[in-house]
Image 1 (cartoon, rainbow over the protein chains, first blue to last red):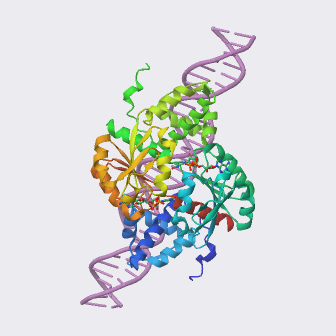
Image 2 (cartoon, protein in one colour; image 1 turned 30 degrees about the vertical axis):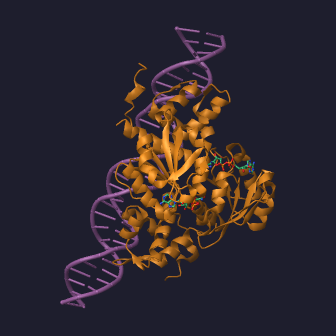
Image 3 (cartoon, rainbow over the protein chains, first blue to last red; image 1 turned 60 degrees about the horizontal axis):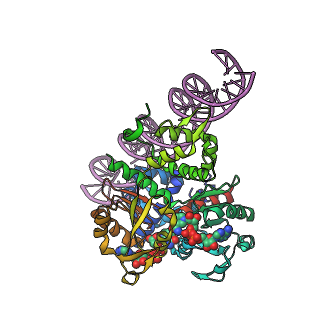
Length: 218
Length: 218
DNA sequence: TCCAGTTTGTTCTCACGTTCACAAAGTGCT
DNA sequence: AGCACTTTGTGAACGTGAGAACAAACTGGA
Ligand SMILES: NC(=O)c1ccc[n+]([C@@H]2O[C@H](COP(=O)([O-])OP(=O)(O)OC[C@H]3O[C@@H](n4cnc5c(N)ncnc54)[C@H](O)[C@@H]3O)[C@@H](O)[C@H]2O)c1
Ligand SMILES: NC(=O)c1ccc[n+]([C@@H]2O[C@H](COP(=O)([O-])OP(=O)(O)OC[C@H]3O[C@@H](n4cnc5c(N)ncnc54)[C@H](O)[C@@H]3O)[C@@H](O)[C@H]2O)c1
């Protein structure tokens, strides 16, 4: 009975596990590229920087894709994880705010290789329009609704200054964007059903500094 | 008995709380700048995007800085949090890998305003040397040890390609860096006592995509 | 077929983090 | 002073996640 897991996967995977699946996937890609056909949970866990028991438990949420006494087939597991996290499909993405950070993001090839396609770069500053970054030209922010509708964009990235971020988020949500990655250092308010993840580089440094101070005072 | 909390704070604050303190601090800065002298846990929690009970419990790890029936003095609490997370001192930082992302980071003013000072920009590519970014000139990577020793650098940022990141980390650790913020999509191995935090933008998008896929299949 | 060896999938326990709910401690009006 | 009201700080209940440990399931050789 193998034809079960196809669209039946109604199990909900713990958040902590979801956050690690991309790490496992990356480790599997590396193993696959280096010609490894099979690996044990121990090996994969080492490559991913986690405990092997945790790895096995995480994978068990997806199904039973290993073979006892043998390990995991690298390419098979890689495909299963990719499918589970939606990397078998193509996700159109818009980036708003093409300043320092927006440029770096637009130029980043790692998004493309993981199933994300930057379909538009938007900025409110007319001076930036018609500049071409990584083959995509920068367009007025007001084109947002049109582009989201035309391309079926579900994911938006905000790289504007903090004071513009909430407005941009509101416009994105109104246009139909349902997931937002926010780089601006503000707390965004969005309606139920819209996911926001924030990346805050200052906070990361501040956490390091806290521990650093601890070490110094010890 | 107020003269207790000064250097006696041997309580260890939960990781989850440490990660939220910078958010509270930012909310307090905003409140302070808008002229608010006092705020309740409810108001501050709303500004920080968390539950008020969680906020109060978090703050209680620092000490008892509120007044029942009144709330918190904005500037006083702001100072206490700043002190606790080490933002009253200046942290010299080196950034290695001055490509797309490294440029953005070097230009980011938010680090400076939170107590971090970029003292060096290092890159292995000679073509980048002597370029000046945000007033700091790009130097050869081999200057690392000299700079770390001279400036007492404890925090390093890695923005090199993935295949160089482990080498850079090893050199940093050998030079005396004890905290690393890593943007390269690899798992770094470092000795005991060295802190690593990773920021992985692809993973953030992949997590959003997972949930997006879930919404679509519901 | 049987057995020794290997590795998965899962159960159980413990630690950590979140939220509720409320006593304790303040304010200000009468 | 007394009382009604506000808001903090925390104990206790609950939920989620991590890791140890082991039975179940497979391999390969005798
Ligand atoms: N640069 C970094 O490394 C870095 C690090 C951490 C956080 N951030 C945060 O990321 C955000 C962007 O940083 P940056 O350094 O790229 O800033 P930036 O000023 O270089 O770029 C911001 C861009 O957003 C555009 N913009 C402003 N208002 C807009 C609006 N309403 N709609 C559309 N576009 C708008 C501006 O025209 C500009 O091009 C900021 O919130 C910053 O705090 C940046
Ligand atoms: N650009 C982005 O938005 C983005 C997003 C997510 C992750 N990342 C990651 O951040 C890292 C940097 O990305 P980027 O786009 O800036 O790449 P990039 O190629 O533009 O820049 C990398 C820089 O590192 C330098 N370098 C290479 N090897 C080095 C070494 N051994 N020592 C010192 N310097 C060295 C190169 O000369 C180059 O200047 C990559 O690992 C990338 O995967 C980037």
